[in-house]
Length: 429
Figure 1 (tube, rainbow, N blue to C red):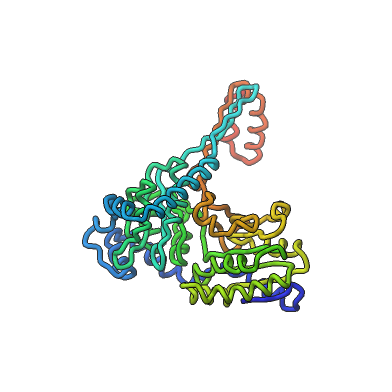
Figure 2 (cartoon, rainbow, N blue to C red; figure 1 turned 45 degrees about the horizontal axis):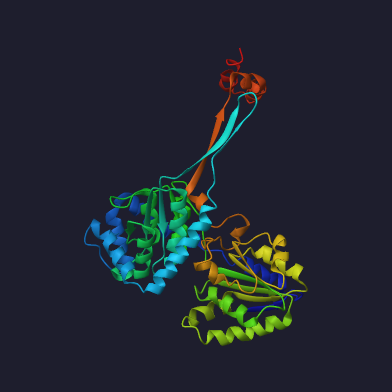
């Protein structure tokens, strides 16, 4: 873990390392991913079966074996504990309510001369959702991807998830049934992204692909972008915490570890003007590490990609955090809402001592698919708009085109586009 004061002579060097935390060596795997994509384009289902046998350690019997039946999903849902079932329904309801408020609307404006300008908003026809299922399966990610697509009005939603040893995750299947998803395929990695982008005999081509994944998934999404739309290129998970001396060191420590336990490549960063808090958090992290089942993963993440930075004041702390632009940002201060206007870049902001990042992962309502690696400077969380598109609406009356047509024709003439010019002038006679 980097433990450093902002006045230290090597601070700038160390801070630049943090800013580079999200860089993925996509070039290193692009050749492999490109080969996988080309095989899917050429051989379709046969390539899928070959890749599943190679990467997931089982061999599909036939094309039908690629799909998970609705009956299997229903049985998984019926078999889960009632308390867990209730928790999933709570999460579903809250996520749906939040995303319904995001839905953009079509609009039209009519000018006095009869001009009508507007915007028509429509959902895409189909969406492909990638849900990880290798080292761990996340039913929460299923909810976070399916619900905004449903709210948008997407008619055809498919899910791809890897099933190592042909053993689908029961919780993931239960979440699919809860969401009413009927098309789920046992396909993972770059193969799944290619199949959804180009289509196979079994898996239909979609318009939008969303969902998190490893470097092979991220690279595949980047390579198929243009053939389909995508949500973002997401890297390892991360958390930033802004805290003052009112924060509880024990709480901050476990919040930092909540991301570290995800992945050895995850980043956990505390920035505070309080030296005492920084010292106490470091001690509490070590105590918590000894209790975590995923201690080995969390420890490697904290040691190699974690940081505690002590600043001269909170203004400097905020400035540094804006440069980092973390995926998740907790503001654990006495008056967090006073700092909110100063925070420019973060995927999601968690305000106050009683708002751990984990609450946003599951039941708060906002989406937990967020920009990572500093891309919060220009990307937004996954939302309803990712599954919708806008179309401009333009209608001119005879009076309207005569009022501004001459100016339009002049600009067209200046650009030497004669047909453009004349298509307006013929209407001015």
